[in-house]
Length: 152
Image (cartoon, rainbow, N blue to C red):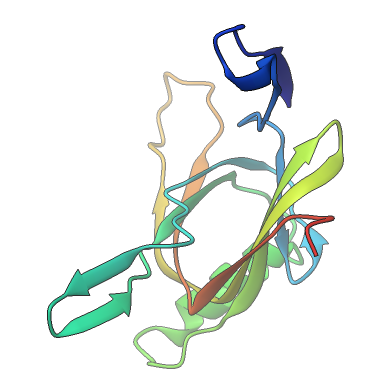
């Protein structure tokens, strides 16, 4: 987290304490995942309001990770289960958590309940590149709980 003083024009010249985008972790069933490059589109709250109906929307988000060889890696197991389920309406689900960190200390947590993989995309295979192959998982879910340590 970066701290900076707000200009004297701000109320009481208070300190800002912000989250850094590169300090995060992703957990799958309580286990810290390795090889996560980025998470995009996480939308914990979105409401659709119409005259006759108000409902919560659950937009998918993406997890971009390196392809890892370990067959027992939690994501590899989940991907195999998902691909094995094919068109079955019952999807293999997991509980995920996106954890914001500040110098390794948890500052905020988004717990994604009933998460399932809706799409798997791989980056380009290219003999002229030395880039790692990325695996992009589109994640759908039942709900997201937002928590801030010390706010209870």
